[in-house]
Length: 264
Ligand code: 1HE
Image (cartoon, rainbow, N blue to C red; front, side, top):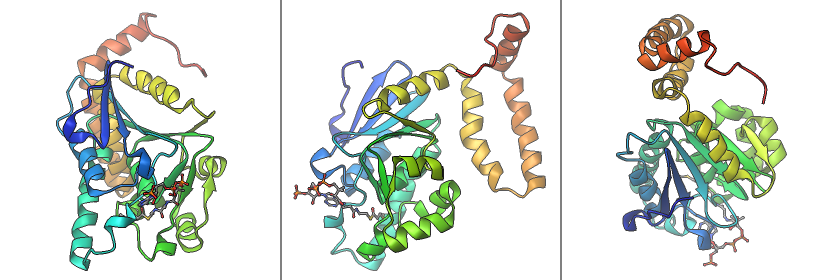
């Protein structure tokens, strides 16, 4: 890892650059990366004005846990109206994760709870270490998800599983999370970041427009009625294949200069 280029204004989210990869690290380990306003705003800032040379983002948590969710100490004095604004502030920040210009890989370990799971759900790929576990204790705390969880998590694991987690306080371990579709990769303890970085390197080697189409077009098309989806797909396909990077890559394959598809 190159020397940290920590920015004083985003101290609660450490920002480091390794070549074309931007590594963001939730950085409030004493409080298990519980999300106070400062941390969410720091995440928002870290995702604003990303250098066009960046091709992939890796998001992880400092300390023994990925994230303990909403900082409950900030909640008690909030009015209903302030609650709405707070939730909308989270939505804006987590939209910057989901609609980042480049793919975001979340590397999860330890507690990935409440708002922590909402952050993870906004990423495009999730890597879990064996210690990772997932909970939505909102029911026990008398609150509701407010960071896009009710929109994004049912699309990953289904509304029924999410309701079970919220109503009964059911906690999924790393294996259960993987089986439920919460995570894409499950690796040994301590290997999460290396795996996240290795995946990021692969993503960096793709054509940028192709990556952009996957993260921007795919989830939108999936929400469209089939006929509209197919029409939008045809436009995106034509745009992507018209890109010089696509033409060069296809030429390279036809001339035997590009790798074959193989199971690694
Ligand atoms: C916190 C928080 C927090 C830790 N808000 N301060 N989230 C939760 O309900 C999860 C609550 N936290 C826990 O269950 C545990 O802290 C953990 C399982 C995450 C970690 O346990 P452990 O033993 O490693 O740490 P700890 O001793 O419990 O916590 C260390 C410190 O972090 C301690 O503060 P200290 O001043 O006594 O050292 C804790 O109080 C503090 N801490 N978690 C505030 N969450 C927009 S809607 C989203 C809704 C939600 O996210 S609901 C989920 C809330």
